[in-house]
Image (cartoon, rainbow, N blue to C red):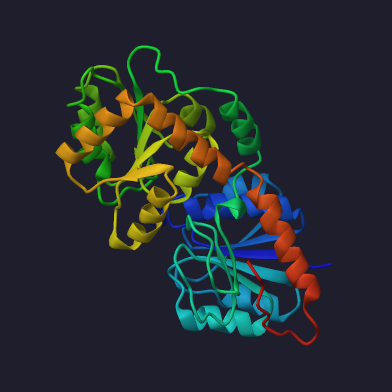
Length: 338
């Protein structure tokens, strides 16, 4: 039986979230997997180590090879996770065969199945599988969730703050957050995370070297122990926010672009994160208050753990398999209740 294909953005400038959630879902589907990647795919060795085949498209905004493979019935279904692809390209894939599309914002009127796992609130549209319960995280996050639920919010001496705005952080939010964290009293222990291709990596390295009790981790292989080893995170409302929720790590969110604002506001409404403006002074005050308020940190922690438990990939895979099985031949676009 044909397996699943993933047309995923692997360009380092797009961040690591696309690949991480697709690999989690691919593992849960447990079938013959083909990844259709961007021409420059630094993730190819890791994908192949998992036993998955990697095929490169001609350019970042192209999915012709993936669509042709789907048309030839060599795939049971195609999952798309790339914002570089146009609406017309996505529509062409949906007209060819079973197509699921990751969206991090509402996709009303879509002719295809949309998977809205980046949003904090369930979508109202019937063509979406939505909500944090379906967040596809790696299997190790289920164990991280169990460990987090057994822990508390006690800060031993000084707070441990994680600053992580994704692998690329093109807006250089890391520098702003470092400036704000250095003004907190008493001085916290700081950990910054960036990818090796981040454009501001050298500048951040210099800043970290000048700060007592600060460390920079470049492209760490596993974030679980990092999340579990901190008291508070400052970051963006993307895939990493879902990981932090699963690990019980309260977060202060700052948006790198206006497109992230709806998700950040939704997490704040769910009371599992606090959204602040891109201002160092405002961030310093917010972080200081949250460090001092153990009851609020505990409430944020519990709210996050109630939303994301590490089992989302299995739930999402089951929904996709059910949806695929319900299709009649020839292919018809069907809506799936959330």
